[in-house]
Image (tube, rainbow, N blue to C red):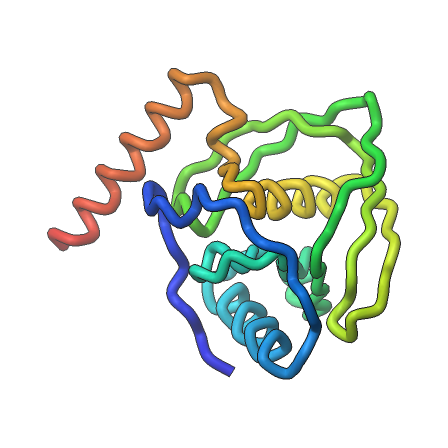
Length: 172
C-alpha cells in the first residue's frame, strides 16, 4: 500500500469525467488499498479515484473514521437510482479543496447501486452523512467539486481563499 498525492483545485484533472471500471482485478484492489490509506492519512472520510489522478468511476469512504473506528467501504461504478424530494443542507469540505468549508444542499435520502471490492453488485439506501458523502464523492466522478454547488460569489471567494492558503504554505 502507498499514500498517493491528492490533487487540489484548480488542477484541471479534477474536472475530468471518470470512465467506468471494466473489471475488478488485483491492480484495481491495489488502487483501492492505496486510496483507503491515502484517505486515512489525509484525515478524510471519502476519496474518489480522480482525486489521486486516476479517472475511474470508483471511490472509497469511511464515515466511522470520525469516531476513531475503521470501516472502509468501496463503491465501484456507483449510480444513484433514487433521490428524495426532501433536501438537506450540510457543511461540506473536501481533500481537494483543503481548509474550505461551506453549506451544500443535496437530497436528504438516496438509493444507489454499485460493485463492491469483490465485484459483487450491491444496493444501498442512505441518509445523513452517508448520503451526503456518497453524493459528494460521486460528484467527483462527474468532474464536479462541492464548490460548484455554491453561488458564483461564494465559489469565487472560496477559490481565492484556497489560492491564498497555497501561497502562504509555499512561502512558509
